[in-house]
Length: 128
Figure 1 (cartoon, one colour):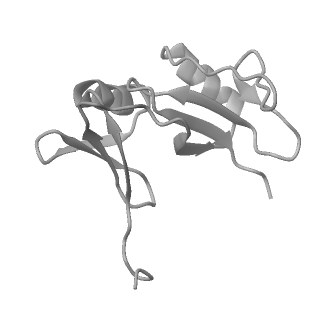
Figure 2: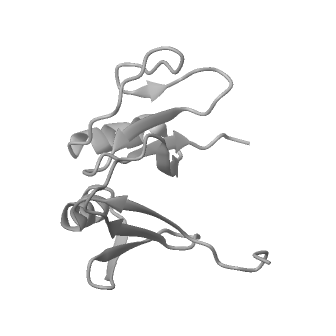
């Protein structure tokens, strides 16, 4: 039934103006305003991601969006310079002082939040 559909993802925020500023200016994404107060993230090579306002928004307690990068240290440093604070975790997912999880067996990954508290990540693509 859905084999050929162009599915897309979405998540809520409590302030679309702050979200637009963060996603466009801090993360450098192409953000379009659609249907008055909804946003559309136009991600290279993928279907769009919809961000919609929700007055009683509760941030997701899981990662809603992952950004693959070639060099995680470079990405974390660049985002930190723009004011992004990376989340710190202890056991069982230990992060270093930069907020990067370097556990063997998994990807190098670092988590941060958007202005609405949704969890995002940058993760280093594995080299072939």
